[in-house]
Image 1 (cartoon, helix red, strand yellow):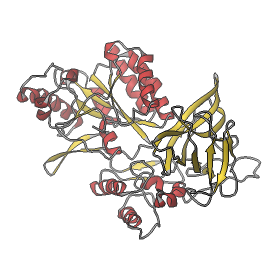
Image 2 (cartoon, rainbow, N blue to C red):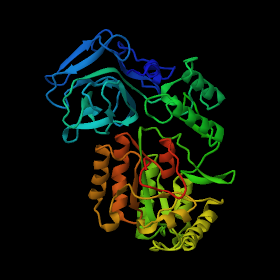
Image 3 (cartoon, rainbow, N blue to C red):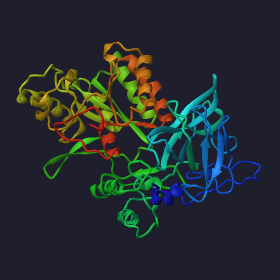
Image 4 (cartoon, rainbow, N blue to C red):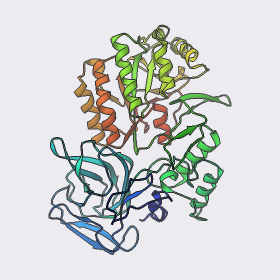
Length: 497
């Protein structure tokens, strides 16, 4: 079943100010924000795509996603067989960040995983990278999309192709393959007027009611990044507009961003007597998110542990990422600067109790006292009365503990085991394997800030995750990004819990 509205607007991912470089220019024009680098519709030919091997790649006029024609890929002997496009001279640069998307369909009778991939020449020869991987249901056109993929810095001789994974060799269709320089407009700026206002809300309402398609752009109206515009996106837009969490404008002629009001990476804010999680997700320009979280700080700046923590914070900031830091109250008084710096950088300051006790089996008043003493120490540094997400020490919890905590308890969706002597490579490979098996998005990752091995792992992981379509975010940002609510008294390993 086709999603007609999505078909109609996928082509509007590119800004209205789109500029196409001339094919006869002797010198390539510099790429502009929003500029289209590739748009293959297959209406008049193959648009530069061909078979990678011996499979058949043919134009067919049956059930195209957009227009009259699409490509049918058949007689595939390997999962990597699919349409390929040479990116030479097309405006893509090694180390650059670009948006990629395509429509795919398969009729195998069950869901299979498909992906857009990059083949390139690297320092060690031919290399491969996945731009976006997604489960594709049988019988439906599905959009594969990564709005912010960074090409490896050492890449040359690049080619773009579409394939299946897990040894699947089913026939499939592909249509409307696109790539562009990411839009300068932020999520929620539905009409691309460089601000978020009631006009954006009204435009999306009219679109969903089929009254008008005017001024609705997929790149900024798709609030949760699932490639569709639906009621979920409208709810997220209304939440953003009504709450007044932030007002950010970005011009198309410069890369300057002006922020009038900002939120931290996540906090619990009192609204009408209730504690509600708020977080600014406007900066997230990725299709997948993971919450790296760090326990047991803060530590002194001149200690080994403190230097490791500083490296972690610096690497996150360098890559434009956020994370959650669970602080112990009895460490805070002599190491205040680390907490202040975390708050300043937009990280999420969280509660790891006062003294890190084994509190399973404790009474609710004892549990709350441990929480409260740490809360008060954190409040003094952040300058306001907050509640905090809490990670139970030693991951020990029961109903008494959870019910005693005013907020949620982010736990452990992936344990790096850095606390148990895991090497840097073990930490890195464990997270990479989760990502490559599509099990990392929306997951809370347990780490500790006081190990050199962890700091070295973060320095490797941040650029790798960015390159593979991930943003590292706080726990609160991760939930908001996925349109999920964090509830008090509940334990979370992933956003899906």
